[in-house]
Every structure is written in C-alpha cells, then in structure tokens.
Length: 397
Image 1: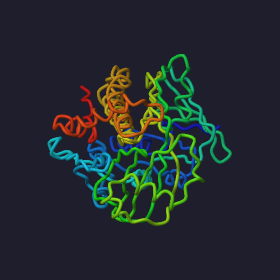
Image 2 (image 1 turned 120 degrees about the vertical axis):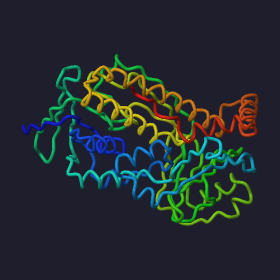
Image 3 (image 1 turned 180 degrees about the horizontal axis):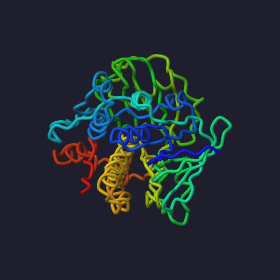
Image 4 (image 1 turned 90 degrees about the vertical axis):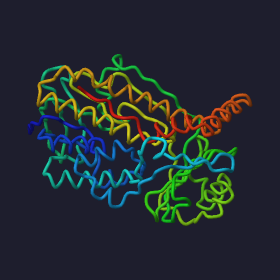
C-alpha cells in the first residue's frame, strides 16, 4: 500500500473543497484532495449562481476572483413579482452598499480547479472507496483506491466537503449526530437556455399557479424555474409547456418580453431543509452540503458552504501559526449560528412565495399578509435585503 502524508486531507473537489484547499495552500498549509468523480463530471453539475458579498471577497482572498470580476454581473437588487405587480428590493441602499454577484457555481469551480493545478497541489480524481479512520485519535488517516492501487493518507485533520451523500458524514456514529429536516411537497423544475434574461435582475414570482424564478448565468444565458409537485416527471414537460407556464406566472408586461428558445439543460430539484449537529467529530469537520441543505429560494446553499470554509480556514491558520488548538472545538457552534439564521431565511422565503397544497384559507391569508407587510415596510425590506446579501462572517478571536 502506498502511503502519503499531508496536513489537511479534503474529501470532495466541489467548490467548498477546492476553495478551502486554495486558501490553505496560499497560507502555506499542505492539502490533498480526494474526489470520487472525474473533473468533467464535477464541472457538469448545474448549480447556484448568486454569490453573497462575503463569498465574493473570499474568492478574491483566495486569488481566484479575476475572471469573476471581469465576467460576473454585480446586482444591486432583485424583484418580487407578487400576483402581477413588481416590488423592487434595493439591496445596495438597504444594506449600506452591499451587493451580490451573478456568477455560476460551474465557473467558480473551473477557476478553483485551474488555480489548484497551477499551484501544483495534489488532487486525486476518481478516488474510490474513500474511508476515514481513527477520527478521535491524534493522527487520523484515510484509505482509498486509485487506478487499481491502494493508498493511505496520514494527516492532521480531515475536511468533509463531499456533499449530502458523501462518506464524511456517514463516518460519524449515528448516535453522535442530531438531524433536523423538513421535506417540502414540491420541487423546482429548472431549465437553462441560451436566451437573454427577461429582466436585468432576478425576479421571484408568487402566483396562484405556483412559484417561478427568473435568473441568469450571463447576459446571454438564462436560468428559469417553476414550482412543480414533488412527484412530477421531467418527461411531462416539453420546452413549450415550460415557457407557456412561466409566462402564465409572470406579470403580463414581463411575460411579453420573455425570449424563449430550446433548453440546453432541464431537471427537477427536490426542496428540503436539513441540518446535522454537531458538524465535527474528533478531527473530522463537515462543510457545505455534508452538514446542511437549504431550499434554493434564498440563494444560500453555496454561500453557506463558503461560510464554513471561512470559519475552518481561519481556525486552522490560528492552530498552525499560534497553537490555538482550543478553537477547533468551537468550529461547529460558530458555523451553526450562521447556518440556522440562513435556514430560517430560506424557509421563510420558501413559505412566503410557494403554494402549499395542504394550506387552508386562513394560512394562505396569513402568509399573504406577512409578505405584504415585509415588502411595504422599509424595515421589512431591510430585513429581506440584509439576509439576501448574506450575514457577516463571525469574527474568530
């Protein structure tokens, strides 16, 4: 068996694993990344595209912000379409100058992959049967198979960035973890199309027929979503049916401006809220989807992962530079304070904007009144804006 040594072993070469690896590499801390899939598969995942200001600054700190700053779209607000009328949420003015960046997760991953390759840092793609060992000991280690060879990695700490279905969380004894979950009775049917966006800002639409979202990846590539029942089949939705239904859920003036075209990707994503506590076990730390899932309504999934990365990176720097090992035990509680606030906002946005099949008339009127209160009140709009641009990362002293 081949044996390797590193300081931080990272499971998963998605954006959180790559971002953590790049930040640590730049800080002089050695990393090794293990990824089950191929690079092309990782880049083929169609995911989020709204980056909070905190994540934008973290990418710049990692030295991978050049293309994002050149090609990304800075958004100073977004629109709520409420039963036929548009309500603008002015993020910049309501938050003292904060904005969000429209830049696809695929592009973030591509930039981070290129930076890691240029740095000469080690990534094993198609790493099979990854197994962490001795997580409560002084020297944890992993085993995996690569190109028919058995490999062992000795390390100081392990970062589990391998998603909801990954091995990292599954390596923690089930009686250690508390799981909090809510599964929603609908999903998002999404398509990607090489058409100009219908609006220069994102549009979140509440309508009796169901929720819709008009988003984008660039000035010439659009991403649109429709609320559909959880058990809906993708085969039931031709491109034409999708466009017709989207137009029905948008304000008339906006629907008239919609440019349609053939979809280049179409999928249905289930919606759930999910958190595990704690997010660490011995020398294993969970980041991103390995520890938490949010409905995409609040654009928080990728951004929450960046918050975890920032927290663990800051702690590890203090451990290696200052010997502050006591901070390791604070990782989970620091992350979870921010995560639960984002879970609340994502749940709130989902509850306010979607049609729930089991909701009675009273519940529907309450939701409608609450949403109207928030958008008609400057204090309410400020609350929405502060959460949307992202709550600040907690200082670690």
